Length: 151
Ligand code: RB5
Image 1 (cartoon, helix red, strand yellow):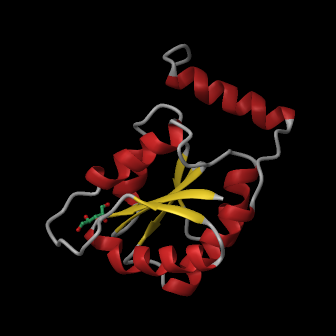
Image 2 (tube, protein in one colour):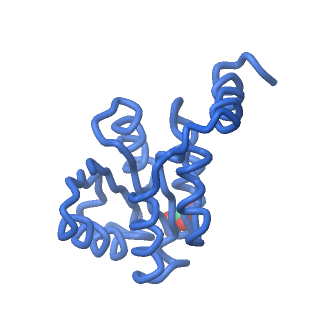
């Protein structure tokens, strides 16, 4: 799969590890940075280009990391068409795609270890959106909120 990955200093080590593992598994991964550990950097500078690449179709799905994953998810969800979620568990990594069409997985570099993070990423990448009518209906309502048609 064509994937993108981004992090600030809070997830730099985890990003490097996941990038290597994804490439070893045959995925084409664009690294949106940080490209070196910069303790004063800001997650929006990396998450926004990733989110834009997802909505532009340049990558199919994204992985966004910061210290907790909270800032990354808040930032990513400001971009129209992004359905990002902070994920800590296997069930949500799978169902988040199957039911909610999640297109950016967010994680905390300070809250998950590398093996848990790898399980979440593999589960996310392997999951397929179900396109079930009830999920299409719900996501249609989410899209209406985003378009300012539903309050
Ligand atoms: C940066 O220190 C930290 O605040 C950031 O990575 C993230 O956790 C924000 O949600």
